[in-house]
Amino acid sequence: MSIARLAPSQRGLTAQASPIRRLTPYADDAKRRGLEVLHLNIGQPDIATPRAMIQAYHDFDEKVLAYGASEGSLHYRQALANYYNGLGIAAGGGPIEPDHIIATVGGSEALLFAIGATCDAGDEVLVTEPYYPNYWGYAHLLSVGVRAITTTAASGFRVTAEQVAAAIGPKTRVLLISSPGNPTGTVYSAAELRAIGEVCRSRDVFFISDEVYRDFVYDDAVLQGRTTAPSLLAEPGFADNAILVDSVSKRYSACGARVGCVVTRNAELRAAMLKFAQCRLSPPVVDMLAAEAALLTPADELASNIAEYHLRRDALVAGLRQIPGVNAATPEGAFYLMVELPVDDAEKFCIFMLRDFSFEGATVMLAPGDGFYANPELGRRQARAAYVLQVPKLQRSCQVLAAALQAYPGRL
Ligand SMILES: Cc1ncc(COP(=O)(O)O)c(C=O)c1O
Image 1 (tube, rainbow, N blue to C red):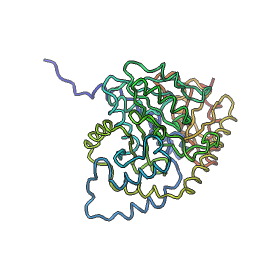
Image 2 (cartoon, rainbow, N blue to C red):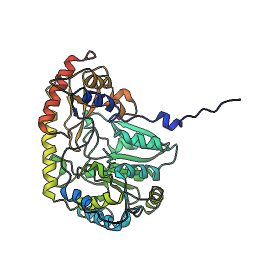
Image 3 (cartoon, rainbow, N blue to C red):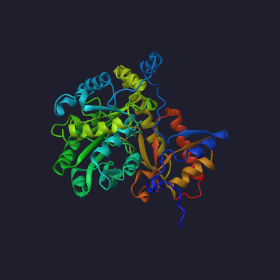
Image 4 (cartoon, helix red, strand yellow):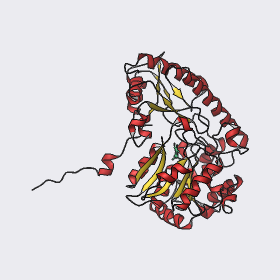
C-alpha cells in the first residue's frame, strides 16, 4: 500500500523567491552584528508620506470597521476618475468614469486581476526583460507562461513595435510593460505606446500598462511638456485592449497603505475582474480613505519629492560610474537602475557584501539581477539598485560597493 506524501503543489514548489527580498536573512544577520545595511535592494522610499494621508488614519472613527464594496467605494473611485481626467486621459476614448475603476489591494492585486482576466492557464504574458520579478510571480501563480523580449542598455532597455510584433506567439494574450519602468527606468513616449498598442490591437492582444511610477520622470526632454509620463489610456483607439495598473505606494510614498487600482474601458474585462474582487471581498477600507486624502496632496509637495529623486538618480549614477568595471545607464524615470558588475556571480557578490564584508561599519544590499530575467544567465553579472536613500547615503553606498569589489574573491 502506497503512503500518500503530504507535499506542496508543484506551483508552490517551483515559485521563485523574490530577488528583492530573498537575501533579507543575511541583512538581518548583518544588522544583528551591528552593521548598518544600506538598502538599495527595495523600492521603499524614505520620503515622508503626505500628512493628510496619515491624518486620515487618525480621523477614522466608526463603531464598526466594516467590509467595503468589492470594487472600492464610489467616493474614492469618483475622486480617482477626476484625477485621471485631470491628467488628460479622457482624450483616449472619453472621460474615465468611476465604473471604469476597480480599487485593489495595491498595484500588486491589480496585476493579478489583469493577468487573470486576460489569460487562461497555459496562455502567455509577453514582457520585456529585465522585468519587475512579480510579473513572473503572478503569471506563475495563475499557471500562465512568461515570454520575454530581452532589452539592453544599448537600446535604452526599450522595445519597438516591430519587436513586439515578432515576439507575439499563438498563446500570447497580453503584453505587460511598466513605464516608467522598474527595474530599468525606461519611459515610453506617447508615440511608442501608440505604435506598440496598435500591434497589440491588430493581433488581438491586450496591453497592461503598469504606470505606478507615472510621476517619476526627471528630464524635460522625456516629459515633452507633460507633468507625468505618457499613459496608454490617454491614446485613442485602445478602449478594448488597454488596461491601466496603478498604485498609491510610490507616488505618495505609502507602500504600506496597500491601495491600487485597475482601470479599463473594456466592460467585459471589468466584469471578470469584479468577480475576482468579490472573491477577496473588499479592498482595505481605512487605507482607501487615506488614499483618497492623498489625492489632495499639493502639486508642489509632489514636485519637490521628484526633484529630490532627480538628485538621487544623478548622485547614484555618478558614484557608480566612478567604480572601475561598473556600468550603469542613466534611467529616465522610476527610481531604479540595473548595474553591470565586474563579478562572476552577482548573487554571490551580494551575499558576500552582507555576510563577509563591511566598510567603516556599513554594507550594501542590492537585488541580484538573475531574478529579473526569464533566462537567469542574462542577469548573472547584474544587480538592481533603488535610489530611495538620501544623497549622502547613496554616496556612501558607492564607497562601500567600490571597497567590496576590491575585496571580493570572484572579481573579474
Ligand atoms: C512596476 C511595479 N508594479 C507594481 C508594483 C506593486 O506595488 P504595490 O502593490 O505596492 O502597489 C510595484 C512595486 O514595487 C512595481 O515596482
